[in-house]
Length: 116
Length: 112
Image (cartoon, rainbow over all chains, first blue to last red; front, side, top):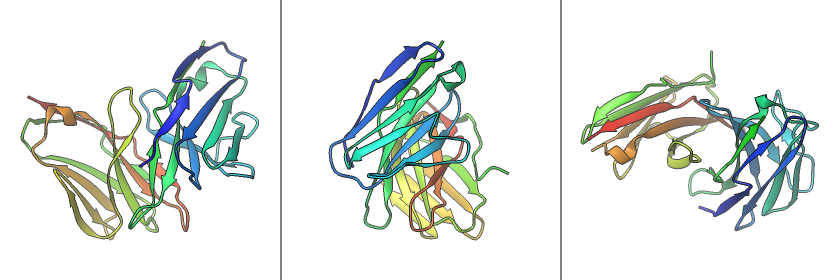
């Protein structure tokens, strides 16, 4: 596995503001992902963070709302822009590690965001 | 129909019993399957992965896959109170790359 850290671990923000979440991994990884987990819900993939190119967004998520950077193979950021209370959620990054028979995703500790 | 379906539970079992968690998926092209455990307020941690039909055992955990029935299960033997958590089934629907779709999870409660 890998050691994955996220900053901040939690934050309380006012509506209309933006928050940038950082994800750092202790080894170089090809693929990093960003997920959202709304209260009482399961994980929903927001986008795949591609190193050196634009992120690949899932249906329902757009770059203007969730801009993502991936400057190198160990780091990525997700910005939640122009926040509303509906953005209150846990945001998780994950990394893909090669396994013997199948590649596997490992998750960071998450960022708990509350928007007032 | 959801891509990955799980009974939300809670599934209550006494300590020492076998807990059986089930998951069905809709995409027949899915190739690999994962079980994650998530404690309240924590991030998901990988328990098992499986990609071939049949059983795969790891300690007290056994994953079972039946691609014809589009069915994945996780058995936990000798359940412990520390196993109480939400178990998420995830299916990789990517072809040549990984794109996980998660079920809503089954909450397991193991009583002493």
